Length: 169
Image 1: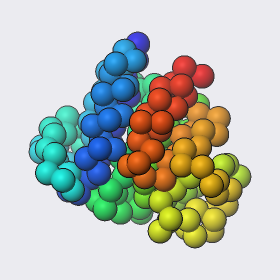
Image 2 (image 1 turned 90 degrees about the vertical axis):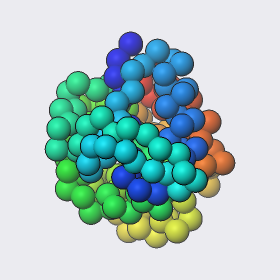
Image 3 (image 1 turned 45 degrees about the vertical axis):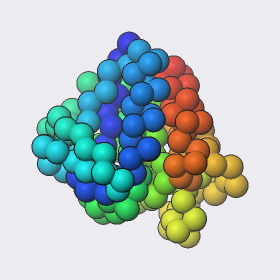
Image 4 (image 1 turned 30 degrees about the vertical axis):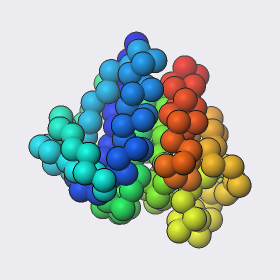
C-alpha cells in the first residue's frame, strides 16, 4: 500500500490522536512517516515521545497517499503555518486523503480547504470554521469527499477508520 504523512506538533500533541491512527493506518497496510516543524524527538501532552523523521520543509506531497494532522494543544503551532497550509492545499488539489482531529481542522480551515465542506471540530474552534465557510456537523467524525475531520480524542478510532476509508476512495 502507500505512505501516509502524520503531522504532529513538536510539543503537546494529543497522544491518543497520534498513537491510535498510526496503529490503525499501519494495520491497514500503509507506511507512516512522522513530520513536524523540526526533526528530532516530539513530546505529547501525556508524555508520549516519538521520532520526527521529516521536517515540514522536506515534504514532497506527491510521495504520500494522505496527510493526517494530529490535534492537541500544540496544534496551534500550525494555525498560521504557511508550510503546513501549502502541504494540505496541495494534497487537496491532488485529491489525496486528508484528516484532522480535535483543533487541527482549524488548520485546514485557515488553509482555505474547508470552505463549502462539512466538518467536525473541537468546540473551541467551531466559530473559526464557520467564519472560514465550513458547514459544522453535530457528529464527532465527518467524512466529506476525501477530507475527514473529528472533534476530539473520544472519536479517534472512528476517525482513523474513516481516514483509511478515504485513502481507498
